Amino acid sequence: MNTKIKTYIGLLLILISSSCDKDFFDQVPDDRLQIGDIFKRRTTTEQYLANIYNRIRTQMDWRFDNSFESLSDDIDVTYNDMAPFQLNIGNWDRNTSAFNRWGHYYQGIRSATFFIQNVDLNPEVPDAEKTKWKAEARFLRAYFYANLMMQYGPVILMPEELLAPDATIEEISLPRNTYDECVEYVVSEINTAIPDLPMTPVNTREWGRINRGMALAFKSRVLLYAASPLFNGNTDYADFKNLDGTVLVNQQYDANKWKLAADAAKDMIDFGQYSLYMERDAGGAIMPYESLKNVHLTDWNSEVIMARVSDNFGPDKMGSPRNVGGWSAFGPTQQLVDAFFMSNGRPITDPASGYSETGTTAQDTRYYAPGTSNMYVGREPRFYVAITFNLSKWINNDRGSNNQPVTIQMYSGGNSGLYNGRNYSRTGYGARKLVHPSSTLEPDRIQGRLEVQLRLAEVYLNYVEALNEYDSEHPDIVKYLNMIRERAGIPQYGSEDGMVPVPGDRDAMRRAIQQERRVELCFENLRYFDTHRWKIAAQTDGGDFYGMNIEATTSAGFHQRTVFETRQWKDKQYLWNIVQDELNKNRNLVENPGW
Image 1 (cartoon, rainbow, N blue to C red):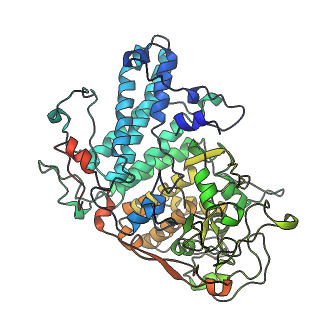
Image 2 (cartoon, helix red, strand yellow):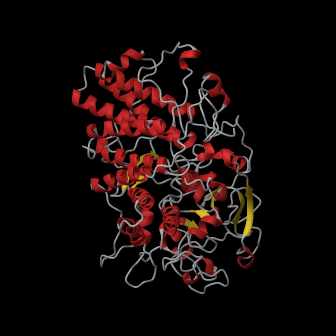
């Protein structure tokens, strides 16, 4: 992939296609220009906007750039010398700087504000285009604030008039706004931007630039998080205050916040420009495996709302097993493996599911070889899309003899199991969902494609979750949840055959929605934030974490639940620490609770 694109576009969401005009995304501001020169020419102004886009971060590398997936209960990153491992075992205090994004996003906020204030000075850009560019920058500013809020909670809303570079410490010492004030501002900014954003890309050069659908979808996420228990009447934060005594998280539960979230998601659904991605066979039947795999591999398909260019080295190299040239570094936990449904649509904890952990199968299928443990037999298609397990078949034939798929052996001494090196999964599983079957490794030739950051399935799940909390009898809950299950190839709730009954009350439906969300959106950088906003991370993110017995030298010994790590949890981890350097810059900035 073009190095210039990777370096300077970063997060710009563009179509990877020979027909795509990449001029906009190839632009790099000349740092020798005086700041006032930026808005004299079209090219330099557009370059400046491109670098604001560049503040959107990749979600693909769970080792270095983005830790949130590897800090969730879904994933282990094998290497003990990397930050995720250290944070998970409790080596984390107020001075820990790993994955702190406070300064990164505030730089983006300042740049977006500067752009909004000055773009009208450009004599070469038509007024209509300036209006659209300002709407893009306005959304990006709101997006940066929202990402800060996901990580840190209530933040500082900066003045519309930028502070001077030589401002005194008193002038820059601004207090945090309340969380509700932050949400109100972000939603207002998105609403202001929406009318001036295009419905869809005007031409291929516009692929990836902010449009109306992106803004509507992201607003649904912001409001869903605001309605969730961490920020909606969380009395644990009663003493979370500014220096002047202002309580930063509202202490009164407000059910109407769920309605606002549901309405925002429904607005996006009714926008009508997107649909669940489905591949069908010659007879018109949905092919669940192909649909679920390729929704992440088919650029700008009908479901993709927001995406970015990525080198995809992370998922392909880290998610592939060693015997095909991968590093086996992303290991799904047993907790995640257990979350996937059976093919009859029931969870494995349901006595009627047919799940068994004893014995093996003699079957030879497209997914696994004879001798596979019964715990992996009869699972739903999303399981086979997402998880590499012992004796599963690899997703392409590149290393197979007689053009037959490679069988992955995860036990000690197996072709991808424990050995005297460091590239093996400590859980006995691999993360294959985002791996492209056309990528080859050794040497690495990573197949180019987009990194999907927001898709329609998330909006459907946002909608049903919010609706269940606000109006638990609403028929749309089952309707849209079943649309997700239909595409996944499992029986729908309340289907005529009676195979899977509708969950009986709000609490049961909440559990069903949370499980569906975990399975459908696994490895998409949402699980960490979901368990935090639901205020269940104390139960999910600490204690013993399980995988298979990777030290066993046979498959029979391998299939035993084994603790691979004991993670430490403290309630202060619901919000990220603000590093001391940032606190030193601002006398009115209070640290998050517990740090």
